[in-house]
Length: 485
Ligand SMILES: Cc1cc2nc3c(=O)[nH]c(=O)nc-3n(C[C@H](O)[C@H](O)[C@H](O)COP(=O)(O)OP(=O)(O)OC[C@H]3O[C@@H](n4cnc5c(N)ncnc54)[C@H](O)[C@@H]3O)c2cc1C
Image (cartoon, rainbow, N blue to C red; front, side):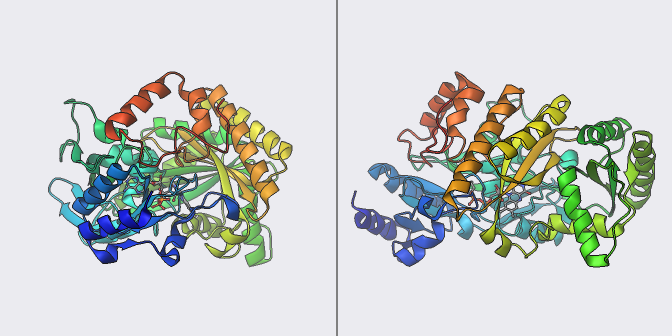
């Protein structure tokens, strides 16, 4: 394949300065945040930096003609290898598609290009006293397009849900370069047609490049209150949370941390204040909750929640520093395990994780397996955190996090063996092997095990959008890391 010929064609089509082939430009796109050795990175052949849907379309038409792979790139903070150009080819850096096109406060929608970061989108909405409550920790870098394509978790999932709850319509460019609007404009509900826009959720750029999206937005809440409670175990905390939701209170966020993670919070307190916080030995889980809304409702919710937590064996965390530390970590990525500020710490020991969806009744079993498999593969535990990502439900999306030194090839190998065992365990427990990272190039080999014959239907669907399999090939369906189960 003559790369210079392809690059020249794209340059002629969308402009010289938007297309690069020099190594200096390619280097930035060789990896994402997934743990991987330096030898497991890949330079693309061509970098394209479009600013409009039409330019993406022109690029894809040429790519399709030459059958060269195309990978959409957001902030490259993905943790599953989704944006790594493992088959080389063209990367389309979407960050130039960063215009917020319309804020419609009457119909409660925003229409935006998808290369805008989640933080910048919300900064724009703030001018109107609105917000889009999708709030991943990586918001300063991660984009709207990637949030759709990875089905990300956010801090406020238990009240507002995920992108599937926000996405009303999207403009995509298919593998043949066709521009298609999918979804239903500004209505919040529809039973008309197929919900093709929902197919994009978690598709990791394998069905189309999402260039524009219309999302549901809300007025910003007046105030919020945040508390933390300790419980003997993760399932005790989950039960109390369930009771809280059944009471009729509207919980804004609810994250349950395991004993190990609790240890990081108490350690941070000890280091700062020179004394232990008042956390008893029996504490095996730490539940953070917040409420938002009008101050009267928030105050009531906060007080009522204390009553319910107490009734269910919970004890309030008295040290405000611990509560504030958690909130800060959600918004600044300052977290005790990363003693140095992000991103420096990640270059030494990376945060790696098996992100699993586990049925509620099996939380403890899954946690036991986490302890077992980290020991088996000699991987250092960071701790488990149970996020809840469906509105008004205890809906565990669990990050079983570990430390990985990805300058050590043996440790990287052991990490992926750990991920393999955890993924299989999740599927065997009627859960799912990925809740917010996607399949990337790590989990494709398990898709048969999780999805059975429906994987063949997925492949047929992919061919409709991308007949020549140029869109992010090697992701979702195959993996060199993990053999097919
Ligand atoms: C410190 C840290 C904190 C994190 N916190 C969270 C968190 O709280 N919640 C969470 O869910 N995740 C979190 N993540 C993971 C990561 O941020 C998310 O997966 C995020 O969606 C990646 O966004 P990105 O813009 O960096 O995407 P990239 O890594 O660039 O791409 C991710 C995938 O999306 C595809 N893609 C990107 N843009 C498009 C597009 N326009 N059209 C089609 N496909 C596209 C790519 O091809 C790739 O497959 C965190 C990661 C880090 C490093």
